[in-house]
Amino acid sequence: MIPEIRFQRLPGADPNVPLPGYATAGAAGADLRANLPAEARASGLTLAPMERLLVPTGLACALPEGIEMQIRARSGLALRHGIALPNAPATIDSDYRGPIGVILLNLVEGPFTVEHGARIAQIVLAPVLRARMREVSDLPPSDRGAGGFGSTGVA
Image (cartoon, rainbow, N blue to C red):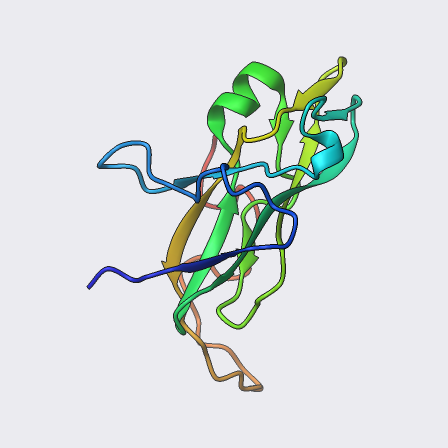
């Protein structure tokens, strides 16, 4: 069964900006677009070098219980423009109903302008497992043991 994600456009959002959508039949992520405030639509929002900015999508959503929405970077923005999502993947929980925003970070030496309606991130749905947390006095042994980063082999 295909889950249904219900989106609501927030007050002031441009109804001409498409809802998230899959670009190809095999795409795992659906493109999420910037839906800028009316006063910024013509000029866009400019990120200075090393600046972070919360970019609005103009959307809120309702997810089915047991599903999370992950917000992930778009590889084209990262490669061509040095734009990253510092908290990627961000998680939207099934009980969150607030505005969806995307934190963008400009990692290059020049400014970058986010245009109204531009694809700024992608969303991927994933099942959520919830666990029972329990304290124990000893953990069962494993082959790796307490080995940290790089402990499983050389480069």
